[in-house]
Image 1 (spheres, each protein chain N blue to C red):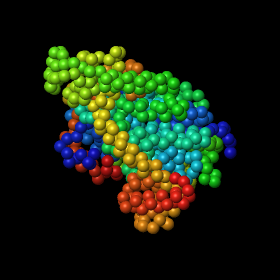
Image 2 (spheres, helix red, strand yellow):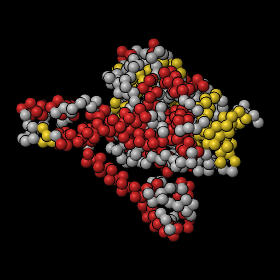
Image 3 (tube, rainbow over the protein chains, first blue to last red):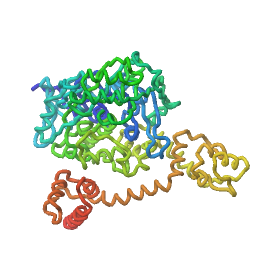
Image 4 (tube, rainbow over the protein chains, first blue to last red):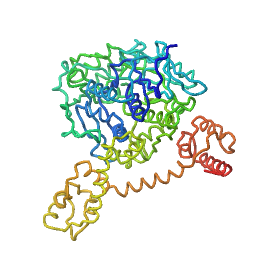
Length: 265
Length: 345
């Protein structure tokens, strides 16, 4: 088997977990390699275009205090910042930011590419190699072996991902992306017990077809409060969100379609 | 969606996807309904009567690893050097994922350097709560963070994360000198201002008493410390700034910290004491490889649960679902006997 390179740490998956894992390992002096199935979807916000919110905002601040990247990237990509729960006690005040998805990805990728000791590779990891109960490295779908003294697996929803839209279903890691099939079996072979979870994401609409005059705009705080303790000022233009409501007709339509919904959610 | 089909109405939050796109995220319409139903559903909503769907809603199912197979360092118990982080551990959310990724990356590096792992306690960080919940309780549905999951909420505020964690991050080499210096400056400013509020007294001048009456609180009869005045629920730091300003501007972050410290001092102290009491259990280590089966008085169900999670200390054992206080007491006696026998603790 062709062996390209040895690393201290290999990180499999470049989502929000993988980016922080790779940066922190490299910052602590490790020769690190970050694998992603697609270089163009690094740090992709695959669900809502927002970071933080109740309790989650606390996590982002903690990541920042430990030298992580999420808060700084959020500040570079944020297009609305709002302090939530100010009517309650200070323990539950929490910051939330709306995010420009493209700016977020670009900012995180910039941080990764500027990090010393960190290599980023597009490739699908098919197998984790272990001997005598100790990890030895990974094998890619091209049959290339990469040795590592530690491997961090951060594959999100990609392991045997199966998308459902009504009775239609297809294998995918996320809408429009390859799933990871072999890696899941490899983890099982290493003795890990696995289960199955499901999650969902709503539709995306074209704003040119929305009548915003019949909705209620909600603006962020002015001036916006940044997430990172080291950000001086938010420089992006700020946008509102809009609020509307479902009604009885909506609920009838939902009930009428349930017999063709594979997963109640 | 089914969950709210019975309610009168449900809020839909339309979020912009970016500055240079017309795409909007319709938060609240998460569904795996067929496409034709999605179109009717969306167009039944006020303002969305003519809405074009750019991407349909979908549901995704995927494999995850039962997280009770992990140590607190996020290393798997079964394979040395293999760490897992994020949704693969059964969580939901970018922030939960990023927090675990950071910890897994740090602990992979710590292991290779031959250093002890970075472990955060439940009274130190939501990250500590997150990881302890996952490895101790496991999860059968996507785990997301709520403030209600933390016992010591008043200690784990979003405004003091740097006070809780910067020193650890700096000692490890993760936090830059510049960021650490900024934090140290804040810490000094906070201490100095609290000292001033305790020492400096304010006199019941006409202006001060008029200001207090405008806030709906009683006038001062004699002089009091600034600290005591700020403890009144109606009085905020902005009042002190007007009538007894600090020698130099503190900035909104430190001002808010000062106010929280003074107003909530009693509650904060109580939570610190609670955490210290709990710490007695957290520091009672369970010897690794302890044979739970051999402990008389533990039910088979309890033994199975202990064997699966392999708790590192009595505190963690007490948080495993189904472990009763009685079982914890039995385990504590057994653990203490074991340590006495081996001559250390």
